[in-house]
Image (cartoon, rainbow over all chains, first blue to last red; front, top):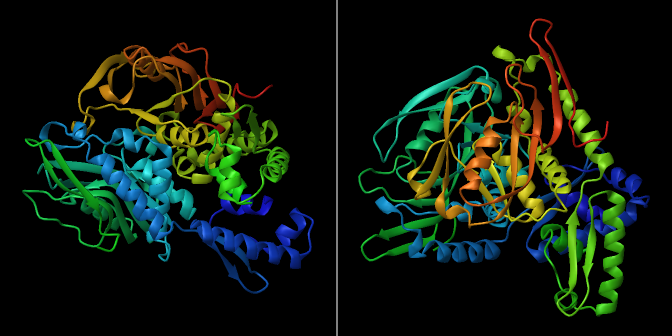
Length: 264
Length: 264
């Protein structure tokens, strides 16, 4: 049980068997047997699996996974909550801050993104202030990698920064994004996480900024996507968990369906 | 072991014994015995304890706690990292974004704050964009309460907002803070979490804004505090984990010590 706890708290970290047998004062063979049971329980609970790495430098890694069944059920419930007409704001925007403030919801979204990108090589999660931040950390918690936050405004505490100007898809306004120079090494593998995407101008802006660091964007995940009536989408390879199909202000009706991550 | 996992994932949630015996197909008496063992392990690992609530509506709650020994050791290591002269920025500011991007570090800080405020009645964690956000979520994860984010600028996706103007302690500039009207019910118990405090103008600003919602500020936690040379501190009842004692630009020396949370 102590081992389960250790593994749950150190996702994707390779732990050697000698470490466990020393820590818990048990023979390596009994540790092995216990790990088999842990693996079975993780799998039957749909929360992940243990991966064994053979050899002298080997050990065991807990790979957190959120089963497809659990994910889809969770997202469908979230769609249901989003369809509450009270959420409609002037301009057809949706109020979502209450949902984004719920730590359990955020943890679940992080687990789904981490599952979606489990087979990619990812060194950093990148997001843009402000609403994407909790989702980025929730994903990073599971993938066990650091988070880098792109800002809209330079701040003295960031040191020297690289900045780009870009045109936001929906408003056609010129906007700025900055990233601290020392935050990201050259050539890193990154995954972009954000809360919402319309035409995708913000994501494209982040991609251009990341180009300045020669970063490889290995994946893009957005919690919700919606179509932009005036602008065609400029990002095509992304994972979305929710699709806001329609917001009808007059009829006070919202239609939210599962995103492209799930099979139709 | 499945029970351990469930409890770890549902901090501060009251779980009835019948729930466990149904879920894991075991007699209530053996569940009770197992819970005793879980409690012992949690306590010996310094990660918390189980609290039993008697009666028909009773059950068991996992209260995550980060032992004082673990906390102090962790914070002293963090002070050590902060004292790296490479962190000094123009104006005597310190670069901390790399540390604030490390999910394990953030999780630990959240556990320490949650322990510091474990005996307070807290309904919401409140923070201000941007750097306090991950710390707020990490604390909220452990206390199992929602997060509310005060912004510097109103956004259409927030709906109608309440805003206040305040004078920032160190720069003497008038600044604005806004909070979505529907984000916080009247009279809620809140805990303010932020990354850094100098004179405390930002915290005072948040307190004034929270007054508009008749909120009761039950606690204030900052990761690091530093003295402001020009301005006296305007906040006095707070918990700090780190104190930046001195940043000497000329000698390229930083002195960081443990904050007021720890006994001298």
